[in-house]
Length: 261
Image (cartoon, rainbow, N blue to C red):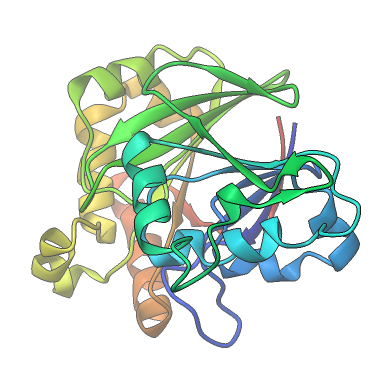
């Protein structure tokens, strides 16, 4: 399983694009502004999009991706999401005000967009990729994802403040887990703001890992931080580096990084 990071910032600025991962060449995980890096012919190949939640930085490019192949469309663009996320997209985005109701558009006898329901802990197979949705606590219903590859697995959680004991038990039970990725949106001095907005700081990230990942996982799994707000990028990077004094080696996820599972 090839995974490429198209965007991983907690906002948009020069050199910073919001969350979007490319699995292989046909599947996106979130559709933030990172999707703009796809060439037109690459975007044409995207037929499935997993959406973690309905916040704007994760859905920005959905309509543009779905709108690519108008003339020769042979299959729908499938959006895989929680029922609450699909409902939000229908009500607030594809509503004939912000964007046409593309779910109702038929081209060459093919529906333009289909919504497919994701359910917590129910592993799905999408174009040969096995993915398990994991429920996490954020400002609204949100999923993280575990990608299961032949050479190990990766847990990717773009936005969260915490998760249930059930989720942590599930993560710790993955014997082949190689990567754990979650957010550090704000620097430590803005912990109150992070808690209000249901995000993490580097110290909150460290506490979360030490309190919930098993000792074996803390030793064997590579830890990454994502979703850093561009304005605080250097502050957060410095604070991530300082976590080494607590015995945690955390790397920052970067645009254009590639993983092979």
